[in-house]
Length: 470
Image (cartoon, rainbow, N blue to C red; front, side, top):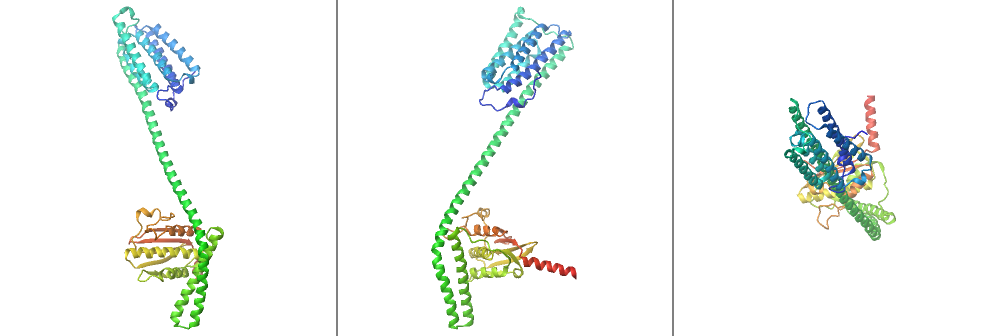
């Protein structure tokens, strides 16, 4: 039977601190085979006449006994043998065989006496502290016996008297073998220590990851509960709003007819008629939203317009937000807005722009500034609509949570934290993207990216075709 010299399974994880596992016993069996081969080789040198004083018959007895013990141990089941008692017995067996070999080789005079150190290091790593105590006591006892034989010649069975230059060769070999064996054991101990440190580090990282995932899951659960509660509240609010909205819509229509019949100043009549039309249109839109909340608990289904012009939607949002703002910011609309269209739901895009305009107005008011800019540009098959302000910009504590529900920097009672969350979800529903970042000049920049409208794409294709013909 050939021993497996691989040390990988030797340092397997153990359930108890001093558990002398079956894997460790197998490794010790492999090392014992190496030791028996070494003693057998030394016997050959003795028989060759290089070390005439060594009792070679005793060495052969040790090789035979150790091999028989090792063979029987390797053939038996090692699982029931694990534990501290087995570790102690293994230590004693090896120390007894080592002491007999040294006794036959001259006792204290033999330079291979240092093998006691290797054996103690091996047992200390494999068997733990208690086995080490027993092995140390046994080593002291064995060395004491060898010293005792020096005083009583009748107990000596061999002498260390090699012929030159084999005395020097033996001393150098003993030193190198002792140091190499100790280094071999220490290397495995260091490897085991590093493996355990790595395992502990991975366990800490996994525990930290588990805690992070738990916190995120708890946060998502809380947000889901709050959104569910908000949905129930929204249905109740929608029910209560339905009646006054219908009344306002009726009164707006009546007001528009009354303005026409009065025949007042034409400019005043135009302004009042526009306001009445806005009231009528907005109450109609709110009525559709409340009705959808009452019937299904969700927003109205997407009404996608593949050629929604940007300018009318921007002008409508401007009228809703800036018309009632006195001495407030001014909205500057870039000329490119009038030339572009997008594929979007007009009502939902209007809702997003109203929210972004209102945030820009509030940011400028806090900073004491006046200007808000709206611009648009075409990038491939995408149109980018940008809203910029001169406010204080985004604070680091809120920048990473802008689109989370209920995240707001406004004082209690002035903001719900749902505006940007709703806007983000609406833009995503329309196949677009909403981002907000700080401007280098100060303030914030919100960018809406939506698919370009069909007529915009068609115009570009026509221009390209005309350029080709020319």
